[in-house]
Image (cartoon, rainbow, N blue to C red; front, side, top):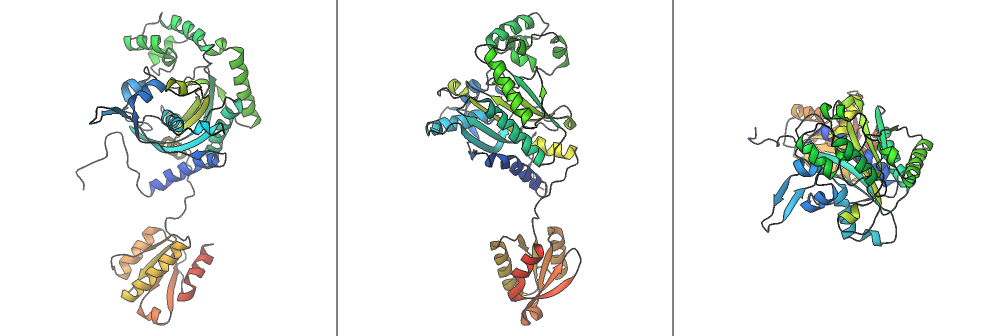
Length: 420
């Protein structure tokens, strides 16, 4: 046994469980690929300032949870705690917004890092699939992204999730609400750290999960009462489009999310079967983020869905995904000539798209058949010197136990036919 273990708050993905995570990633990505989104991949670390400016200096992510490092050249870098800022930075650097086809629609999948207290559903290393639509201000775009996430979850078989929806206003109406909220919060009995947050971003106080804070927030000013006419109309159109598409949502006036860059539409996917870590994903509109990180005005909207928490949601609902067989055919050679011939057959099957494996290591028949059973293969090909002399192999159905001789020249075709 190795003397090393995965760092605290992280996990390894190993077979067979890893196949479930791959299937979830593919299911979330499928509707995006079908809706004009192109794949983007960014580095695992970025300039610290990218996140402090975009995510927000008052957020827990920046103040408490980022993994930072100093390079030999003195640069300050951070392991990426979220995906949106990195994707927008990459799109700006590549001038994708100048190609004349807005919005730029991108999707991504990767690992993210936050120094948090480890618990079920909350890890220091976690996986997300995300989508960003950059460069257009349109309620239909907000609705599209929510619909695509809903479509992905329903395709996985999930039913017991809820979509929470809110509007955070814009640069015209939110400052008025901010002043009213600050006035209310300053009168509360709060600790010094929370009081500092009031002055930097008071909306973040509404996101505080501590019961002693939430109790005092009863009667706090509600953002919807301060929305300007433009934001009200925008939000109503998002709601109407979702309803017309048959997507059920809940209005949640306290939903603010944990990042400073959100404006107008904000939403969260929650699953009540996950306990305290009920959020499985979320997102919203971030019209000012591009300017925050030095780019032009590019109104944008996006989301990220947690792969880890989606897997937990599937388990909470007792959903077993239909996963492709890792191995459909397993070859068991008996003797050196059989090794050469069956290895050639396995190679041919793989080239034709059949999942095939081989009994390596010169094990005897008993040991090799145990490996065939463990592989989950539907069929096993067995051949010895006598079989080869007759131009045959033995094809065993691992479910029924039936074994039939098949001519060497017909093995691949027979297997494809039976698998079909």
